[in-house]
Image 1: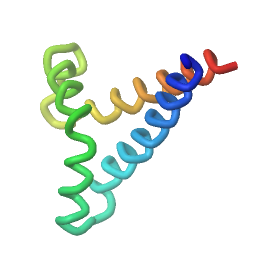
Image 2 (image 1 turned 90 degrees about the horizontal axis):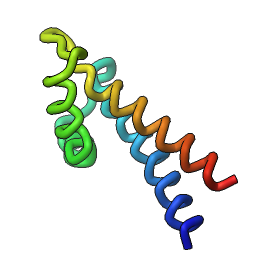
Image 3 (image 1 turned 135 degrees about the vertical axis):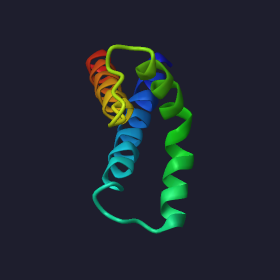
Image 4 (image 1 turned 180 degrees about the vertical axis):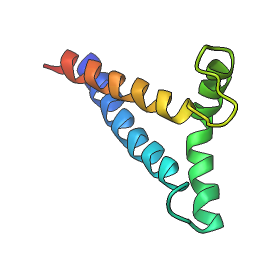
Length: 87
């Protein structure tokens, strides 16, 4: 049973990584307003707590939002831990 939970967590982390990467690319490429709103709806439940943590940390910068990058690092780490535990 725990292997199934780890596998689902691993897949969830991979999918969320892709969504966060697409969210980060919206600054480079201009997406339509509906796609931007849809991405914001998908990313905001995990991005808002990360923004609060970054705002209170040493990573706080006033010019750039580093929370998507920190979230991406956390998701990659979570994926690696799940993959290690599945072996």
